[in-house]
Length: 487
Ligand code: URA
Image (tube, rainbow, N blue to C red):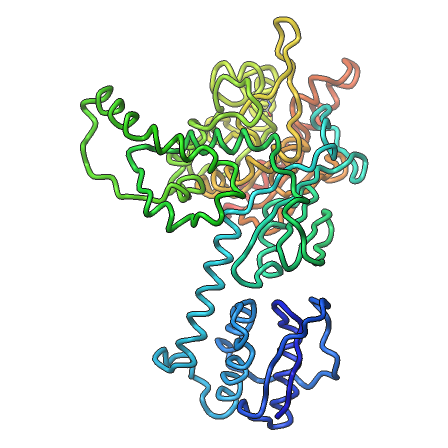
């Protein structure tokens, strides 16, 4: 009997190397035993020399990484059984769903997939106090990397399976702009803006119990809660109670549930003309993370949401036709936008409108929106002074912006200033260096980076004209690019 010792957790590299060696030596599954070492070397490399890769059918090769994170101690033996059979004449084995081995492995893949989904949906970062707070200066000035402390966040999560390494890249994609750590009872993952590192187990106590995001999550959750759809059974199925204690918004659940009946009664009383159709029961949790099916549905969510930082009169939604060739993304609504509920209508917006006209772009044919949908300001006497959103706030709104642009489907997206570019790319990019056409990784549209119009307003008089001319030149290039991409 050959005994293969693998590292604890999801030791994909170790299993691959072992399967190659065993298969090369002709060791059948019944003569191989897999154990996991108790020693911590969680992601240790396999100790023996590598054998050549196996010529596996694609579906078999794809199933291996999807099953390795499963907690079942027999997973490696089962997978090696599959590999062996696929290499010995059963190349289409995975198509036989009734085969007991296939059936079991597919169920394991499903369980891992479900666990990944729960982690993506229910993990909540909390700000680590004292790190990266209080930033914010003029828009469009391009902050060099490393010139300011990055915000730092931490999250605690208890997955059912060994999925941390598989789940972490999702959070890199979603929250690239701040440093974060995810702690679990068996391992941890750490992102510093450049590299993802896996490390030893964490402790729940190492994650702050609460933070300033909490109010935002709770308000968002309460604002998207529709009491007429309350279905506690579906709610528990979608969001098992074990996840509740990590979720700030669940603090709101008991009150929301208690208030649901009277709220429904009040709604019916207020709106007797409401169609009394049965609304399909939906999980409360799914509402918090709801995936809108249209721009209108997304806008309804944004409109009902509370600002992360209290004060704004209303959410300012994007404006322009679906299918607009060009979308312009600014930073956040200003004082006038907040009062009127429309983007780019204040002084910076008027300057942008003039520049668009000079460049031959019709404003009504373009789509205009902002990275952050609420005005953040500080009151000084009767004036409301614009405050730059933090990277964490931009990250909070980023999901909406992605969905919004997904519905509008522009061919070209113009990031106006550093905050917009951060929202579009997840990166802090100095505008002066990156100005011009840009590739935004993973996006279906062409990117373009230029300054924010409010930057032009702040320049000393002697510098304004040249900067305005350069801005109009940029917009002319934007127009030409949009025409090219249409061809
Ligand atoms: N600045 C922005 O970024 N957006 C607006 O809507 C107005 C000013």
